[in-house]
Image (cartoon, rainbow, N blue to C red):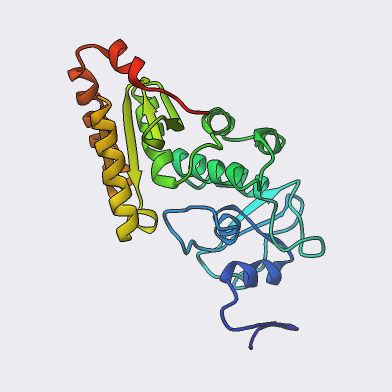
Length: 257
């Protein structure tokens, strides 16, 4: 246990954001709260983000680590009420700190994990600044998305004007990550779910079945979807352009409820 201030001690491993929040009587928020909730972030160890009531004065110099990000909010909880801000408020704060696609990916996960009941939970925290981006997050969020790279690729494809449906179950193939324009099966493989021998074999079976059914498949790795999104979108567009009869392919996509 280490002393962090007058009457304040921290156990080994206590998150810096928690210590920072306790020092100023605020609450952990934004990316720090999202990380604590287990939501996907590209930076898994962000600088401390703390929210304080709007009328609260600025903490005295030296009280917080230099990297600490403060969020002033009229709805901010204090440590007398709760140490970590609600997920919806943390997401609203993240709109001003993260790129759009990262906020959407975190919102997708929050909806999927039922940390948000529906987008209206988030809508009530609509900020004064950044309303346009905030409203885009609400429009783009989709609880069906199952991973950060899947969300990133979905946003890249829809941004290119393509129709994309997440997590569609295709007869004979199974659940596919993305169905693009009703004809192209797109899979996004994270190593955590596709790295063992059984998963590897199952992925190949699914690809063979799709080929036998006359359905085109593109399979992308995590880095493709996250760091080479534009190239992945171009490859999808190239495959679509080579399909001679989309209607015929579309009829072969038999959905299973």
